[in-house]
Image 1 (cartoon, rainbow, N blue to C red):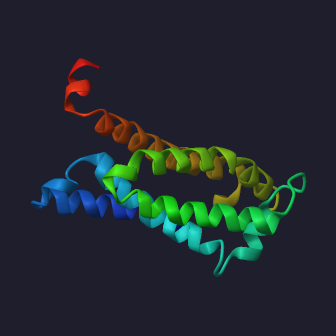
Image 2: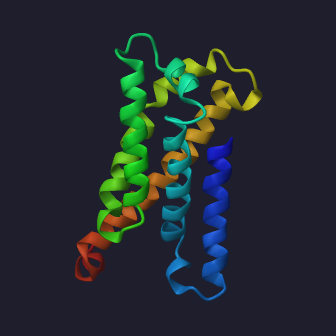
Length: 156
């Protein structure tokens, strides 16, 4: 639930600041970059502090080296979150995060079997993941369009 709050709260705050005159934050994809950055810094940090044991336990038993997988995905989340904030690396970062959301979904399905709260059950987890995926995909598409340049955007 906290990652969703971080994404929505930060994105809304960025849009409000944009509406108050900070021109660069007026577009939804730019605001989503900030929201995703905060969210993935939060979730990536949890791979090392506070929730590491729970995240290792979420790794399906069929996968090898759960601790290493949690470490690698945590580093990838933090690196991509920071890369979202630099325009030149937005598209690759959003692409990596989109891939990670899809690749890590089986861990969410596995974890839903032991849900202790309603938002950890499969349907809420899936809906939340779809929100995250939609945000990352929106930023990815916007980043690809920006990388093409203005002349390519007019003809596409």
